[in-house]
Image 1 (tube, rainbow, N blue to C red):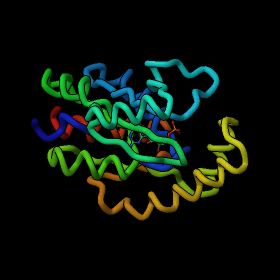
Image 2: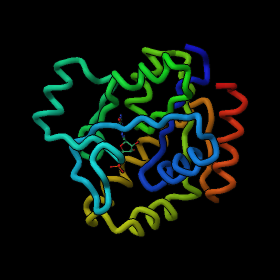
Image 3: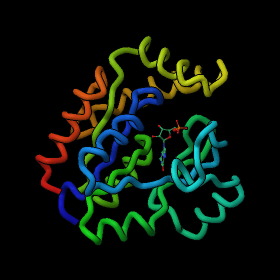
Length: 186
Ligand code: 5GP
C-alpha cells in the first residue's frame, strides 16, 4: 500500500467529520468512504448500509469472533467497527479509502498499516462542539454529556495525528482536506 491510499479521519462527535467527508466526496470523486458497522440505534433518516451497517450486539460479537473487523472499539457505550473485506478490496484497487473512526480504532489500523495517514478534525471550541451536538437534536442530555467527556479524552490524542484540521468553516476546512489528499498523491 502506498502512503495516501488509506486516510483515517477522527475527531470529537459534533466536530463535523461527516459533513466534511460528504463535501470532500463531491470534490474528489475517486475517494471511497468506508461504511462502518455499529450497535448504535439508527438516527432518524439514517439508512442501513449507507450511513452504517446496523447490527445487534450479538451479531456484532459474532463478527468480531469471526475476524471480520479490521478494527473495532467501544465509543459512547456502543460498539463500532470497520469491516475488513471491502476496505482491503478498495485499497487493492488503488482507491483512496477514508475511514471515519475514533482514535482507538485509528491506533489499531496504524499499527497494522503504518502507511495510513491520520487526520484529526477539531471544532473551534468546546462550547461550539456542544452547540453542534445539541443542534443535531439526536441525543438526550445524558448522551450529550457522555459525548463531551469522550471529546476531552480524544483531544488528548491529537498529537498522535499527522494532520489537524479545524472545522471553523465547512468550505475552508474541506479545501484544506482536499489539499492534504492531493499532497499525498493517492
Ligand atoms: P456517531 O454515533 O456519532 O455516528 O459516531 C460516534 C463515534 O464513533 C465517532 O467518533 C466516530 O468516529 C466513531 N466511529 C464510527 N465508525 C467507527 C468505526 O468503524 N470504528 C471506530 N473505531 N470508531 C468509529
